[in-house]
Amino acid sequence: MLAYSKFCTIFAGMKPAQIFRQYIWIINTLGAYRRLTFEQLSAKWQQDGVADGNPLQRSSFNRHRDAILDMFGIVIDCDKKTYQYFISNREVLSDDSIERWLFSTLTVHGMLADSAAVKERVVLESAPAGEQYLDTIIRAIKTNHRLLIGYKKFEAEGYEKVVSPYALKLFRQRWYLLASLDDGNRTKGQTLCEVFRIYALDRMTTAQLTDDTFTMPADFSAQAYFAEYFGVLTNDTPLAHVVVRAHKWMPNYLRTLPLHHSQRELEATPDYTDFAYDIRPTSDFLGELLRHSDGIEVLEPLELREKMRQMIAETLKRY
Image (tube, rainbow, N blue to C red; front, side, top):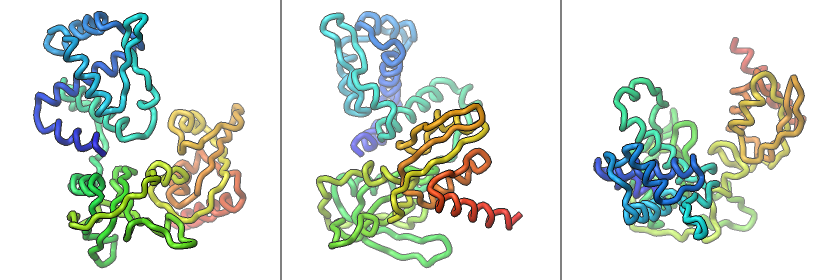
């Protein structure tokens, strides 16, 4: 969350935004060329006109390295034998961390800011809903302060509730808050799903910090909490070994954009490819499978296959 706060602060002025584009240039250049000496990097810096053709100063580069580590978690090391600089933890750019999201967002921002002509030829999705409460919620998460939120579900009466904010998740262009009604402590026999609640930020009517604080469990991990799920709906649906058969164009779609981190390819033929998942098949996951219903067939478990068949049959009745 620290990276997000800095993101909001730095973008308050144009000069910091230009510095951000320099960070992005360094990351992308080292990503493309793998290893470069400072002299090689400086030459490319001038060739690309990063700072109006001015050379890259070593002191500026060192400051940029520190900022890139702090902002994106990207480590730029130097090989003492060859004096070449390189990104030593390239895997950070391939996970679903907030640093990866920031890097992607800022890369697009920098490209659009540099060319007004491009702006009219790039079509973006709508901005995530509920962002007006992000700053307050992030401050509450950072300081472990409880929140007083106003909330109104669709076609239901609104209400106010004090919650302990644990994590934020972006899903399907909506922000969601994972929170508990107490300190997140479980009673005997109580599961984490029974402790936590999910609140969509676009259904919040207010969000205010309270003076009360809560204790964040040292072993809590938002990534681990959501690891067995697809989307944001978390409940006690049992973990299942799900096997699907992908037809038509779907095998390549799933290879390039896996549905879940547990996805494994089992068998490939000219006509289809089977994929396996170890996941809790909640309605979010079933909805995703239905979204690709003409290209995906559930094979296992049999009860899930039957459930999918019933859902498709109910849908067909509407047509």
